[in-house]
Image (cartoon, rainbow, N blue to C red; front, side, top):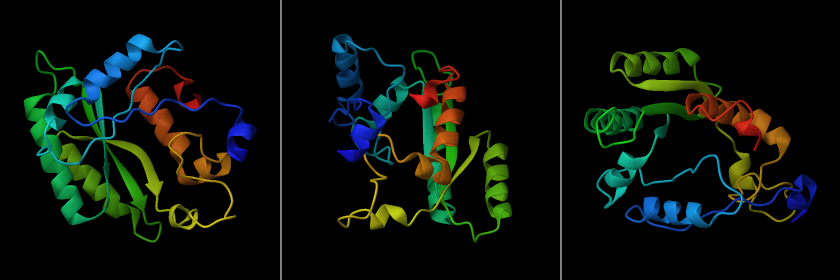
Length: 189
């Protein structure tokens, strides 16, 4: 409540759906939304085996894939992206214009050349990665306790500005807005 009053922003719509209905539900929402939206974000399961995921992905304009510096995660993400790249990217009857990976939970104690080497592998496979790397944050697990300060993981409200800068969410939003050609100030919304 305190954050909502301080930011004086209305909460954005969060639609509950499943992978099979997600795109149809988004279109239905757009038909009735009086304010209009610049972008719709889908949070989908990380496997193509879930019914409806592949179909929904085929209707998206861009896919942003979070990855961790863990060999199993990177290999899985590469296989996932290569399948989508071969089946959907730039194909007639599909919307997908780009697949972009971004590093999350980056441990600042790990050498950055590890991420650079992984990025080089992605590049060799014609897979793109964003420049922004999101650091690992312990605050996410601490916020649940009462009186612990601002809420950082709200799906309805903008996070605390100092936290946004520290964890680089602003840089990620700006980079995503640039890739998706949403305009210079889209990340401020």
